Amino acid sequence: MIYLPISRTPPPADQERIELPASVKVKAGLDSAPQWVLVSECNLDTWPFDLRALPNQPEMFHYGHLPSGMFRIIRDRFVERYRVRRIRLVNRGDE
Image (cartoon, rainbow, N blue to C red):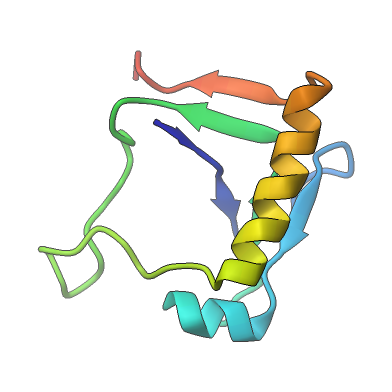
């Protein structure tokens, strides 16, 4: 599984990122804190080792889905970087 990290910490200038707009965070079930999807890095794992259940909902492990327009923007930027080999791959399978 390949997944892109979402960070609440502003990424360094050398990492390409996309800040999630408020409307997208609402639709995805995220809170209003600033959050960025890193498109210059991806994680590789069979199952995210640090994936945790939602607070007060131990049976749920996801917040929601990104709207299709935002998903396409993120996907296209990631694929563009992947094609020119400008992606940092982090193998989480050993953690």
